[in-house]
Length: 487
Figure 1 (cartoon, rainbow, N blue to C red):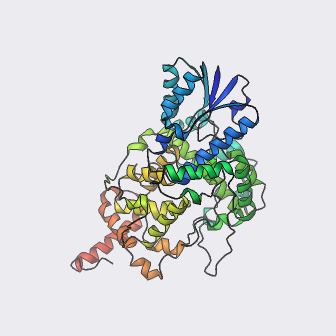
Figure 2: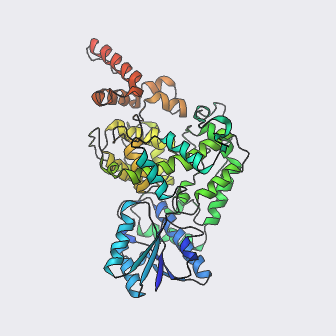
Figure 3: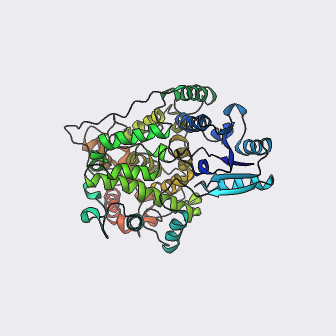
């Protein structure tokens, strides 16, 4: 008997296994121990479990045979799959290739141990076929995101006008770095979803079973079906994409979402496809700068991160700056935060615990920036992001956190460390009462100390030349003053 294993991160409306007439049964595994491996945000667990149960219910409504390992079975993934294979006398198992490195090998070993033949389908979470992305990275030993993005645009024809980019520019970054206007701007609210019986049951179960994990399942706020995810995308395109570009790097203490799409939680588990996202964005009348800035994240950066993860497994273990500080408990609990924790960090950390989410510039320039300035061990930082964010999986977090955010690779993914003092944060988010307060903040002090501490490693980085020169000037003035001044 041939069965199909539907992995938690592959809740497609049209999974290719559904069209395989040889598949007689569909398997779903809710691995309770897996969700306890890290203190995952409860919203992430609700999203995955509810999405799986909705997919299973849809298949059953179509007359398909579904077999589940439920949370109440308390089985790990291996034990759950072995039970399904033996109980239902499976002779062949098909599944879609998982982008996270160990998964396919693990399933294949389990099947081999039980004399089950395997049929692995191509990964459908991305626009670029595995062989194409692997080929590009093999030909580019020093892979730059901009080069990958140009190749991707040419390869797909997306936002192209013949052989040239639409608008005669590949990149509209210069138009897309504005803070919110001081007089304010209207920010459309997110869609309000009503949970059905399946999701309500999952919320209650997760709050009871994972009561020590961050967040409250009762506050869950995301779509869990392809239909609701497409509606969510349509609302973004209609109401927020127009202003996404110019304000995509902006921050505001009392606005967690601004003009962002918040589609990555659904896109990363198949509730949305890249093709659907691209189609929705290009048929809009939003400014080209906004459309290009948005699609660059989807077809450029996201696919580049997946390719970097596939091509460079060493990224999981790098630590170029030899940082060893361990993550304190308050990062996971949001309780007993240090009083001197900077207000941007305190604010964004609180919203991560509330929503399991913060937008990309807050992840990079508030949280990641502070982790790096304070010398936290990069693998500890990566584990924290994996646990706390609803859209976080190894394939995207390893290159993003270990490479770009924490500079643990010494400049392979990103050519410079993304660190700043209070001035940049104040410009983009007005976190302090005044520019002088930002300049005098512990964030700014930590920035200068970071540059001084790692001067030997960073000295050859041309993108830090001006900052290092300023640091040396400050150090010379401090030394001349007998070390009395830190400002």
